[in-house]
Length: 198
Ligand code: HEC
Image (cartoon, rainbow, N blue to C red; front, side, top):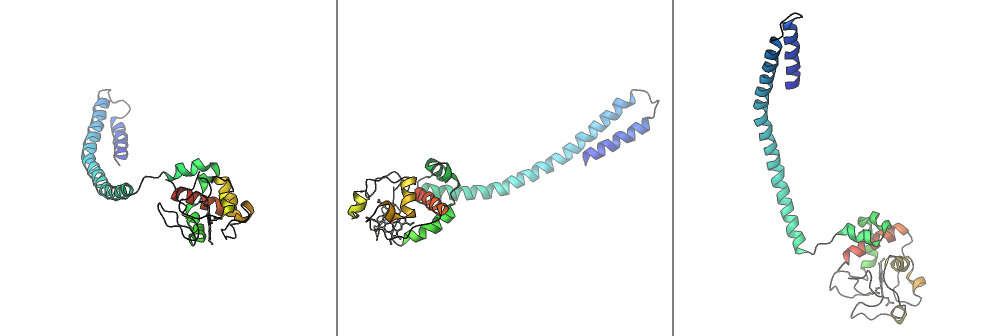
């Protein structure tokens, strides 16, 4: 608005000046325009600042409140950087769909807990799984097949296990038909890695 006003003023003063108006008029007109600008700026600035402050004030407060409760929630639980965990699993896992991973894990939940200190049920508790030796969750009595399999759980072994546990370790006791879909396996492995991170 002020820019439009100034250019209108400039045009008006130019036409007022005419072709043969002596030079001194121009600086005068310019400073009038500048004065206008200053007045307008001065008039607008406090409003603009007030609005900005109001904006920041409201949303700032709301954000602070959210942040505060998030911070409290985060402080209650250990900080886990989910994207760093996924990235550490390998480039394919950066895209893991954790919502689907959680959904797929429902198939495992009937036999496994994975929270820290969770009970062994039909199967062993899976906390701290990634990078651990197979059959090493304390207090669970594994089949001799899995105990002697000499496996370490990483993305490759887990992928093969979840796809078809019997093919990877013949004679083991996990009666699970297997997840056929490679993306479902990727997603559930990503989800488990995050949930069982120590
Ligand atoms: C019907 C019950 C059942 C279901 C469903 C099941 N498991 Fe298991 N799981 C077991 C049993 C039992 C074992 C121990 C096998 C053994 O000792 O031979 C086991 C072992 C494991 C192990 C090895 C753990 C270790 O400490 O070495 C992993 C990993 C695992 N299951 C992951 C999964 C995942 C992931 C799913 C879902 C996709 C799943 N399980 C579904 C019963 C189940």
